[in-house]
Amino acid sequence: MTRYLSIFLTFARACLVRDMTFRANFVLECVTSLGWMAMNLAFYLLVFTFTPEIGLGTGWTKEPFFAFVATGLIINSIVQALFMPSAEELTEMVRTGGLDGILVQPLDAQFLLSMHRVDFSAFANGLVGVGLLCWAIPRLPQPPHPVAILLYPLLIACGVAILYSLVIMLAAATIHLGRNQSLYDFWFYLTNFSRYPAEIYSGPWGGPLRALCTFVIPILLVVNVPARVIAQPLTEQGGMMVAGTVFAAGAALVISRWVFQAALSKYRSASS
Amino acid sequence: MHNSSHPRTDAPREAGEPVIDVRGLAKEYRVFDKPEGLMASVTGLFNRKSRVVEALRGVDLRVEKGEFVAMLGPNGAGKTTFLKLLSGIITPTRGSATVLGSVPWERTDDFRRRFALVMGQRNQLWWDLPAAESFRLHKEIYRIDTPRFERTRDELVDLLDVRKLLLRPVRDLSLGERMKLELVAALLHEPEVLFLDEPTIGLDVVAQHSLHRFLAHVQAERQMTVILTTHYMKDVAALCKRLVVVTQGSILYDGSLEQIVDRFTSHKIVTLDLDAPPDRAAIDRLGFPCEIRGPQVILRIDRTRIADVLPGILRGQGVRDVSVEDVPLEEIVAEMFRSGSTAGTDGATGAPR
Image 1: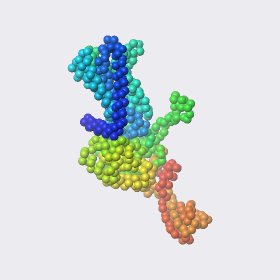
Image 2: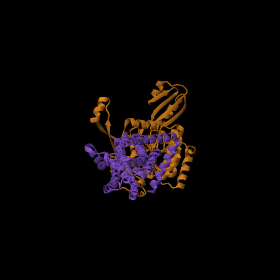
Image 3: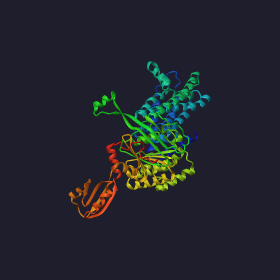
Image 4: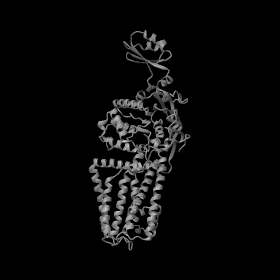
């Protein structure tokens, strides 16, 4: 484990060196990302000029909702920084045979393939998310319970694990298909559902969608559960959701590992 | 598919056991034919036609410790597929193989720490970073302790005279410079087995020569077992005593460089430099296939008759110089590729043991 951490830090260091080599690109990526996030926040502020709450009686008033948004920013920035660059590169590696070089190295291939690139500019959003959370928490209708504060980082980790598993399974599809350049788009569409409170998915269409995105592809648990724990009072139902999220994260990691290994065993390599 | 009759083991090999032991190794791919034209492409979405391509057809090979084996073959012969199987990148359809006592496609870390693969057409160093950064990463991945890492790196870097390139981003290097640094990276962990897949492809003569000298030196010093795939006879002649010729997924010849000449040619090339361009009819009367280039005559004479006929030829008028040579290896191998002959497939023909 220490060795893997040391190797990850070496990767991270190399990526930082590379990012600093192309400083203008690094700054541009940060600015673009922050700009997009600022537009989203402005949009949510606009929504709250029309309504005091997202869904009546849901508890998602302005400050709790911004704690929700902050949680989403933190989780997404971790995934975007640590895993997405490698997953996106995998598509090219499979197509060109670059994956060969990874498979001969004496390390876990999944670790190498999913963590060898770190996009430091993606942490910019996460930092803003932390700032937003620090702004929202003192303004919540009820301060978070100490247990909630302890659970929050664990649930953030679970959310990251669920998204990581999704990324890995999509990357595994790349190995099967030989080319999957829509990987990022597909991931974006899927995770789009996780950006909003689960309560908005109701009614004849919303109900089944909510069930699908909770029990089959558990992306609704990713942001909703940690955000609910920190921004809303703890309830018995909340406790069940916490347990469900921890279980879902573990199951997602195991299943994605299995899918990825199965895909690697079918790897054909590209012609040279 | 782990189709292996060998027991899986990472334990040290017993004395006398080959470093590489391949038996009946076969690899088939299912490929889809894409028909031409828009309509055919649309139809192909629903009804794709596929066929099975045999990249390797039951190859047998034993390589002992310290051997430097060249694998020669035309494009698509199966050379790279063979190296990918031995490196554990892909799994075979049939057959078995052990490298250093391990089944490659089980991809154990112990096994992967003991070999290296260098592919001439693939870049394994970090593109945007100096090679020194890739070496540092390599040190971590292969768990090389610092004194050993520094000693090996310095030795290899000095041998290839690339110290001044270490801090330059890899993308700014020439192909030859990059290949030298790829080799340094591959050898940092002191592998026991080295697979080289066309390492000299695209390199100029100077860079090729430099790599030849380096590889010959390192291999001899470390007693590394090396398999080199190449298209160039220069690589083979400079580095290897043993040659394996592969075409269409099968081994056509496995033996020494000298033996290939004896086995596949029956004649020698006799070149006569004359005072003046000869009379064609007089040359034809000698009764050997010939080629006339101005005052130079090139004869193909049966090797068993050379001693008998050469004195008579030299007694002729105006012979200023003569040379007797074997048929060039390129020519022999090219002919083997063309004919796809199976003449040398009787076991590991003439392989040095």
